[in-house]
Length: 305
Ligand SMILES: Nc1ncnc2c1ncn2[C@@H]1O[C@H](COP(=O)(O)OP(=O)(O)OP(=O)(O)O)[C@@H](O)[C@H]1O
Ligand SMILES: [Mg+2]
Image (cartoon, rainbow, N blue to C red; front, side, top):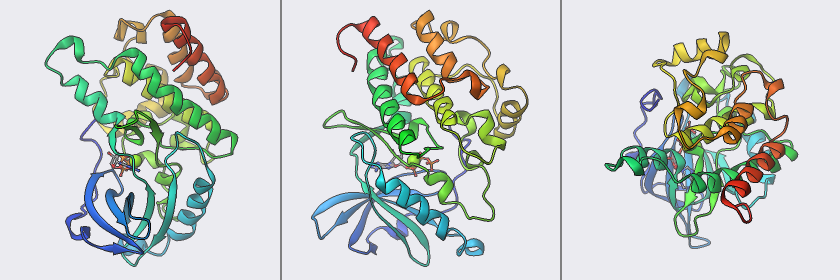
């Protein structure tokens, strides 16, 4: 699905060296559908931070504001070892910004792709135990957030960061995809990025639901294990239509056929998380976490990772 995301035409070079509050933007880390993330240097505390910028479009510069701030305040309250800490947020005349804890390492999207491109076929998948060691902290963080009343709404491999030095897992971008949109336009979040991970009901329902995050997390789990999801849709429109009208036909084969290391138990867990109807999914993220953790113990023994 890479390549589907349309980046705003947005020249990031002009921001290098720029000062925001106390922070100097140093280099670009990467860009997403709506903005770009930079390494910043915070002089007061002599530390590096991550700064995400969302350029304002001239025609709707005024409308983002309230929504953005409210969401950032909710997210700032979250305090969990596997959630990227939000340090500050604000705006200039040109852009909205969020200052976050910097996680030096790789995101799960590039980890999956890096493996897929490996010349040796047996190394094209991330080790299964390692995948579970990434997804369990993600599900724990998500359970905590849900228990605090916060829904992520944009769970995808690009928002799961693996810190190189410690191996620690961080979930980034809580509620941000939605909150950075202008209030009036308020289009569903997936129009902005890839709709691959979005739950079918998230496309049309106004009300957000923790079970939509469970669907997305299940899809990420499936992709990280299988390397690639078995579907043939090639355009955003077709994918959205299919998810709206016949989401049960999305995948062309069951997980265990798509990837041999998915056994019956793991298949059950995946299928329950990605059930098209939210009533058929895990009803809360904690039970998804416990299901996967028990599986991990059974398959690999010892304490869950
Ligand atoms: N706090 C952070 N520390 C280090 N790297 C980060 C941090 N937040 C994001 N990144 C990296 O910056 C890149 C761009 O992030 P961004 O959130 O803009 O895009 P995305 O999550 O891929 O897509 P989207 O815009 O749809 O959320 C990502 O590849 C991610 O790895
Ligand atoms: Mg992101």
